[in-house]
Image (cartoon, rainbow, N blue to C red; front, top):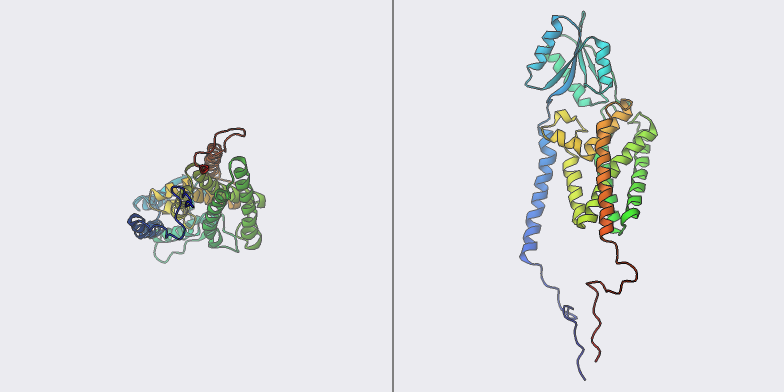
Length: 348
């Protein structure tokens, strides 16, 4: 009685799987410290170098006193980008339009500081320190918060803490679409639907429950959904194009680079360059800026971050559709078996 013929490449029953090669072992040992070093650099470097760099600041009034204040500010090694205004009303309009973060108004009674804690509580605090440093010792400079942060979130803690969860939600949605095998139009529908629900849930928590947002509810939902979709579409698009490694690349780009470079907890102008610029070109930074605009400034300054997020969504969904088309199964009726299909055992 002849023994059964074993198909080439089939493991022998009871045999142990081959041991992992030394290259895989070295990759594990080396890769983890590299990722940790990258994470520490991305998060710790901007935090340790926080300082104003060309921070837009207004100076309003007339006379030699205004010129003196302007000279004092320009002596601080490029910390401020000075905008000159004729009077206090013009400076207030500039703050509400998100042209400047604040303004020093020179009056007959002395200097007056205008801030906007809704734009950045940290910047408002820095402007108070800068104004006090330039005033005579013992002088109390009156401060007017032109666009104040919500009373339930005066330090912007909720808005600051929302950046990472939204990024994680986007990565998770893109990964799920990939793992579940959704392709093409189905993948697009899944990504858009998930982002819409994330926007509703996030607005219900941040606006309705915690009171950290104060704009139009549905506009905030749209921004939160758009921010999530910008992440999820790129993650799913990269995965559809190059395989599961695309999930890791997307997560690395958004969470390890985009989140710490976003400037949401401070301001892009407080981050070392080019981190501040890069952060505004990635979904977390653009999403945070857009959310501030629609929630506190009636949409002022919303165009640039909205376009940035729209470009990410367009690129991501295009990659999803291209990847789905490339992996479309063979047409019905084709007689050619797949290249990796098992061959039937010879008869006899």
